[in-house]
Length: 285
Image (cartoon, rainbow, N blue to C red):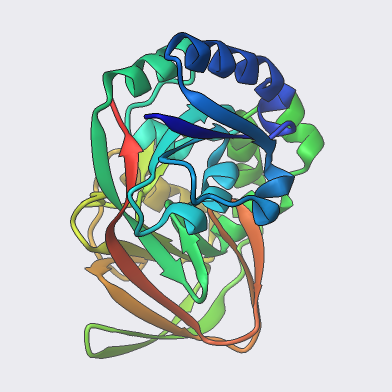
């Protein structure tokens, strides 16, 4: 860690990122590192060539914006969690306390993790369509500012009362699946609500696969029963839900709104997803 690029999202974590940035600068000065700080809006005009390490101060959306610049390179990502969810940090056991997050970076333990490629975009967490997308994309910012990550839980209850099915055709592992579903989640990391719940049985950031969860139910009561099964780690494919692993997936699509790592996306073409194995280096606990 000699030349460090510090990327700051000033709007992340109820605007705590400015305070965290000061702690990061103090850390780098103590380490006698050469560094440059930029805001997330300056990513496209920044040359990453001179940096061996990149710090991302923000949430999962911030990390996701950084990934395209470091994927399949030797640059190492240091995460300073400062967002609403911080799911990747939770998956990697990186604490939300910025001083403790910097201690992890100081220990210099590095893991090579998989990422998803969705069309021409990268994802470290998941792609969501249907119910999952509604929660992420339609939860008001005012609610997130007031309640933090708990706002997604409140929105999840509300949207579960008005589930809508959509017809999907999916290709994977030389199979074709035609299905009515209220939710599709394609997960590199399946943890939700920090690490309290996971929609996957086997999500591993280093196994070269991703997990697919398809929820079929429309009735809210049946949905909540299925959700209890997820909470208590009872995840088996049945008439209500499907779980499977693959490294490549194609969802036939005319027009869908979804999310990639919490960022709203409008998909106009077929959605092609594949894994890019062990393609990002990250400081981990």
